[in-house]
Image (cartoon, rainbow, N blue to C red; front, top):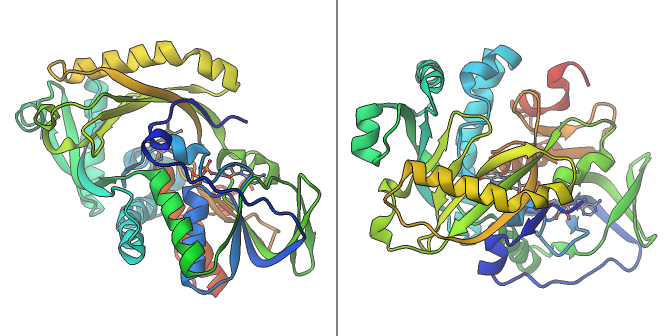
Length: 405
Ligand SMILES: Cc1cc2nc3c(=O)[nH]c(=O)nc-3n(C[C@H](O)[C@H](O)[C@H](O)COP(=O)(O)OP(=O)(O)OC[C@H]3O[C@@H](n4cnc5c(N)ncnc54)[C@H](O)[C@@H]3O)c2cc1C
């Protein structure tokens, strides 16, 4: 599957991590991590820091899956608003999921502090706009429940929204706990760090096409017929994890993003907030360190990469129009645009942990618009499980939560 096409900005902006190390002979390792995107790299980080021997395998050039296409906004707010999530998973689980997401942003920041990897991580405010009157009613409910559950949130009415953020709208929720980064730089930076510091082994261009369960672990088979023996396997294969899943747990979605030419910093919107909205699918925007505007949305159900790519020009026009409705006074010229694949789950939560009945195959599937914060949670949960540390979040993100798996 092509995970993206067009010109993802991060691959152009960063020097490509031009690493070529396909597996050529049988290999044995304690933990085999399949996938070198932001999820696989955070899992590798947590395991290396805990002294657990591991190796990462990727079928592509390192971190050039969805991670390279990501707009890399970090928000504690999950795609499904808390006031709706409580109806599907219950109050306790929904609140735990929101608090875990909030904590995850700080934990990601700490990873970069420890490793001194510098992926342009910045704290910014987040503005959740009401797209219409119905959206405003949703935000009023959402504000009440978040306040009650001790989650950071302010309510901006139409006047405050205009006065503080120059947006002529119905109202918004605001918090100052969000962040943005360069996800490609983060993933490649962490892998390079552990290659050097922890003796991590990293195999590129190594496609895992089959696996077999053994009494004490797994045997993986590459496309070239080479065998890998491991005690545990972590599936951090993103939206291509289907091959390893006994049944599909996600819906694939095509999404679109673009980056503008740089502008004078003084022309950008106040606080350079992350801005998104209640409409579904939602439009969202951020800025970059080199004073570009990065915007995305216009999601449609994924059918095939050709159809997704054919829609790109039309989707760019729609995203541009939407931006101009919010900030007509900011000059905006598209520089690069791309489309990518991501996915959603029925309850808005990711799937992390062991598939019931498989004792040594962990899934780290950060599905949803908050994939990156979920990747951090996955890395910690898997590390804790391997270390025998009990973690409360297991039930919230595990496969058993729906009662259907
Ligand atoms: C346009 C766009 C915007 C987004 N914006 C945001 C955002 O603002 N905030 C946010 O949190 N999330 C966002 N996301 C989602 C986020 O990017 C993803 O959740 C995240 O990048 C997934 O990382 P990953 O490492 O799990 O997957 P990937 O980056 O896709 O990595 C998986 C890797 O596994 C490898 N692989 C797959 N199968 C095999 C196999 N059989 N053998 C070997 N290797 C294999 C692939 O080659 C790939 O490199 C966005 C996504 C897109 C497309």
